[in-house]
Length: 286
Ligand code: PAF
Image (cartoon, rainbow, N blue to C red; front, side, top):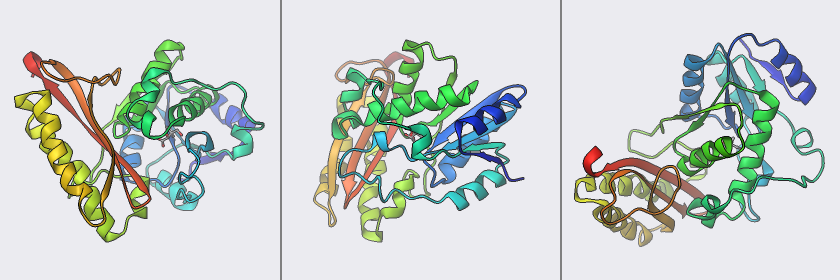
């Protein structure tokens, strides 16, 4: 069945008032792929009503980034939502989300200035601002975000805790192509040769994970060995960062660290910025 599609705050409020029981929200920027669909299925297992928001948020794109060419595939997204049994799609225009230039926005703090935040200054401020607006507008019981964006997920959890936002934040596992490439709406930008180079990201993470028994430093060395080759490939990988960090604070871990960690990587292939990560466990809790 086709979901109810609402575009304005008034339409959303009216649709929200008719929801009985629990509501799960999957916030997206559209260009839905199997990764999003797995989050939607997860939402369906968590709540009686599933809402998907589709909004390409200008605030989280920096100058020179791909806001203008970001894929906008609303008709296909709606079909995919219908096939997954989504109840409600909130697809606001820019004038609905930002009727004027916003004066008050979320500041992501120190966690927003490392790794992806260092590669894309201001990105997390814009992302958190729109996520808080979406949570305030939709008022879900549960909000589901992909673990591929590990730093985004950690920052949303932190915002929800720090600002007492009444929602449960849940992560959904990364979905990969059979050769390991993490699904991303940006994969469609890649030529065949660029895609081949991009595979170095997931290969580096696998190499790092395979070295986990030898400790954090062995993990980063193994991953860097794969990335070094990719930076010399044709087309080359432009490495933005490889970090081994605490999953909830994104502070670096190394040496004798014991406990959970995330190995996160990002790079550019051609004009396409790609990210990936893997969760690891070190030491006694292994
Ligand atoms: O992950 C995304 O697609 C976006 O960052 C989000 C969470 C929908 C906010 O615009």
